[in-house]
Length: 390
Ligand SMILES: Nc1ncnc2c1ncn2[C@@H]1O[C@H](COP(=O)(O)OP(=O)(O)O)[C@@H](O)[C@H]1O
Ligand code: SF4
Ligand SMILES: [Mg+2]
Image (cartoon, rainbow, N blue to C red; front, side):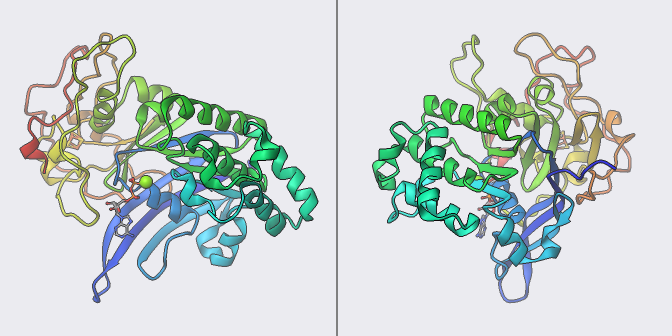
């Protein structure tokens, strides 16, 4: 029998408790994903989609007094939520490590940089101080910290943003984890330093065979760096697949819209299109597909019936009218398919992720004439006006 994957998340949901009647505002809804050893897996979506809550729930870092978490988080087959907080704490920072967006907030401001790495080693690995100090400097060198010996004695505020993020990666690697969850690790950095930090993560990932879950709002960054990509919208996964396929042939209109808003090398545009409107708040009742107020190809069916997860050869998609696979001419995004193209294989996602809506019933055809017969027309995935998107 093959070994279980490093991390398997099955139907993970997070809700916030509100008021005194125990009402729950759902913020993450039935997320299922797998991170195998040595794989780079991306989780992408606009701000407010529920990415950070997903990562905090995976690591057991949410406050039980204000949140309700359900679903399974399996680390090498072990059900961590069933195992309880003690076991989760033992694995965090040891087998599973987290790198945050804001390295300054993640560091202790009154502890020198090297001492923070030393602390991780002495508390978790029971190393003697001298040995831990030597290992800390070695780790700082490994993450490309110039003049590591001297920088180990610096205070966090004395380092640049890029150097601080390198120090945080050294802290995360201190106990030689198998799994690294990096939540917007490069968002606070300028473009050149972003590339250096991603190169560094890639190098340590390859060297140690780490599994990495990279979380970002930037689909270009995630799809360019990862093997697999999960696209999240309003708490749900809406598309999953091989990064190369998602980047070139997205099936979900939201993925296509995210791609359209990325700058394309060699393609001059006066203004990049923006995706109008915003991600709904947790608990906001929209009815139908959560993306429909912002979707340029929404039909009546989309407004009334929530799409279920439909498996694809490399993942899945949650849409009544997913886009055709045929790639259009250069720069064009594939056209949406008719409603009938999806329903034949509507099944819940692997791992029992929640599937809202029936997904059955009469199919409405694309009402706005955007369905392309040859798959070569550019597709405008944005809703027409701001007003519709509120
Ligand atoms: N502690 C909290 N209490 C209430 N709502 C929260 C809390 N933390 C996050 N949220 C809301 O949950 C949604 C998802 O948040 P988050 O996971 O941080 O999104 P992302 O990381 O994708 O930007 C957002 O609408 C956010 O405002
Ligand atoms: S086509 Fe319909 S189901 Fe698909 S994303 Fe747009 S609104 Fe949602
Ligand atoms: Mg976040």
